[in-house]
Image (tube, rainbow, N blue to C red):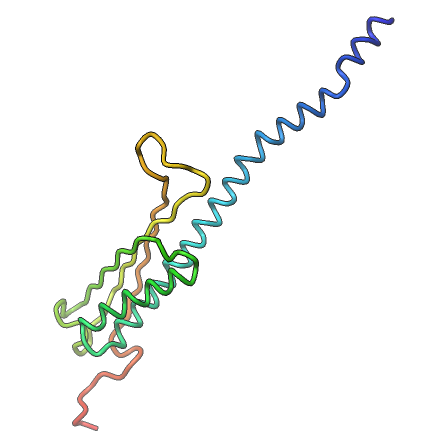
Length: 155
């Protein structure tokens, strides 16, 4: 009987140690997943707002050149509002049916914005660079949605 009692005493406290290690091994990846999802969601909100703001800024500009500058500025501000000031920005504007005169008559402007957000707690390893998640968004705006387009002499 003394052997059985001593064997039980030798095991006392090991469940707490095993539970602690198991909790650490499961919680750390779970916390990383949750933080990564939050970071990607923040980037998704930012890129969606950037596409809308860039489309509106381009449509409200008086010319295509001014529209491009204002669209990029609006997109960068939208990214900065979500804390992504340093995020790379790829902004492309296309127009239909007049590809070289976006502010003409009944053009429809499509703004495509792309960026990347870094995943937290993952360093650049194996020479591959820091792990990132690519995000993109598009927004379509018909000319005249935010301003009236027409012949000034006809008024």
